[in-house]
Amino acid sequence: MIKLKQIEFFRAVMLYGSINRASHYLCVSQPVVSRTISQLERSIGLQLFERRTSHLVPTENAFVLNRYCDEIFETTTRLETVIKLLQGEKVDHLKFVASPALSNAFIPKLLAKYDKSTCIHFESCMLKDIAVNVESGIFEFGLTIWPIISNRINCTPIGESSFVFLCHETNPLSRLHKIRFDDFVDQEFIFTNRNNPIGKYIDRKVQEMGVNFDNYIEVDRSEIVCAIINAGRGVSIINSHGFDIDQWPHTRSIELDSSIHTNMYLITPKFGKLSPSADRFINFLKKEIEFSCEDSLL
Image (cartoon, rainbow, N blue to C red; front, side, top):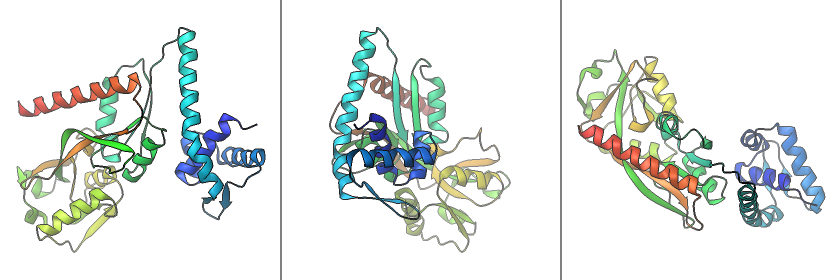
């Protein structure tokens, strides 16, 4: 007989593509994940993965089985909710994901203000993984600073978000009130991964302004950009939601003369309804965004 735990582990491996990443998500050791997957294969008499040196390759059997997993877990979740209602128990659970630019400063401060009686499972992941996480039902919704196009999700702008220039407090540019692109043409620039949409966007903007850098550093996350600048090296342009003066006290944030704007986006599944817990949190989020906009106008 197939056990729900085996299906849960199978889904995690399908989503993350490796035993290592799946074990991190499930908060168990790699041998436990590997053993559970092997048990599932023996139970059903089918090979689900081809074992390679560094990763697992799903077989056609795995893809077929995975299509039915969402329905199994949705039914199980509804059953657990009914049981809790019958027991008179009311526990709010919230499970969502956000891009790294929002996860370093914005989301933690938001969660610090939120209802502490709610059980929260929050994860940060790269933009390309957010749609998969929401589509598969592993997370109820996602938050990004970049739109995601998919016929299985809704991508709704819920607030404005801008980009800012960062430099160390000892950099002469830190005394300027606004920064032009040609102000930092001779600086060592720190790019955020240009294989990602946001990194590509900043790179394109810089090129459009005719700026070319002889020296540059490229990293994969905005918090690493902040850490390097705070330590005394380089300048950069990142999303304002990714910077927090309390975390990086030696870094200065300066408005760009040629503004770069984007939005904060809410990513939700196109089919199915959000839980009351998710609706409450999203309403709270929208009010916080409104308050922050009003404060910025004062």
